[in-house]
Length: 510
Ligand code: NOJ
Ligand code: CA
Image (cartoon, rainbow, N blue to C red):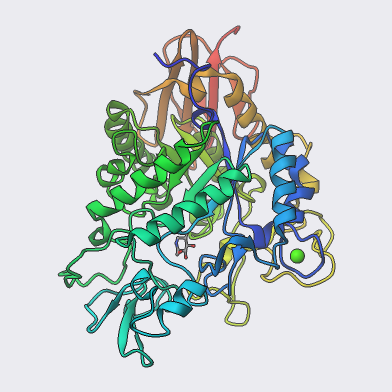
């Protein structure tokens, strides 16, 4: 059985995703920045998260909000400077919080000096750092960008971009690209970062024949990008992080909906340490849906010794409270589920406040992919402008910004923030929740019940997905440690659940 003392830190950690543009603004230009993050480290420490993942902060023309990098070794002036990130790393570490950066290997910005050289002439030494062809195939780009090939009149060829035309794909079959990008990792590892989230980790290895996709999929993240060579690329990146002490970690975005295929990206323990599991991002608020997706991960990952991740919201999808029909009760019950499953939970900034997506109009829309709603700024203060003093934030605030503002919720008994804080704390102190096995228990339809166990430590979780009360008797004597709605905490579990209620139970008198 795994021992909590010898397991790597990232298995037991709760990770918090920061979308820097929308987190906190320190200089009044309406755009969140690194010093904004620095000023809220106490908030994050109070919440109890053990690691932060920052969406891209590198120099970028911002065609795709920073996922179009023009210099991997510098901070975009919108977000601050190298001195600011160094300070942030040091201050986070001083609080026991690790920091992961977002590594974008599949493509650069079209303004990256490598691409400017590559497109300057056919015989430029960097020509084959990107993917140039005389004829396009039928691949489609993501983000509503049409064909994945853009014509370059100056050199008379097409270049490949699985995303926007401003995001040309790197040619990872070129060893010089591999070496240059591995050095980017070293640059940041030397500065002390604890690892990386890897953007579309399954896309670097293209089909060498560039065959037409027979189903003519309109989404390039589909499995035709799942090529053996991407695994080789990841093994190389893994070797780089292993040059460094301290259990640096690689978490990959393998945006494929087949768990079996995603599992292959853990390799033989020599590729990703963890891959995002996106099944719950698609699941409805429904016991059967969650039972199916949790069951699938347990069935495949546990025997393979691959450590799962759990994600309900991120910067690319509608927030889960919004997806669950706006119900705060459901969002609160979902928090109990997220933080008690077997695997590393990822919290997307603002979900600990119960935020919903901001309504976006044609005037406020920024993202070509239409993902602005979940990227709305965090309301820190109840009074407008909610802690975003000076410039108007780049996107409108989410609904109920005053009511759900962080200052209203921190330390307020019964708030969503306090629910997350207490769940993270409970997880931290329970080997069963951090590292224990997962087993489903018999329960009526509309209820999901599971047991977590490690050594002598045991917990049970019961979640009622229905909008009416239900009974769910359990063997043994249990007591309510945390209730999503606060109901009955510290009392013996009486075998009943309120509507949309989730309970974390511990053995009675423990
Ligand atoms: C996945 C990122 O999460 C998304 O925001 C981005 O647009 C694409 N990769 C392209 O980098
Ligand atoms: Ca700013």
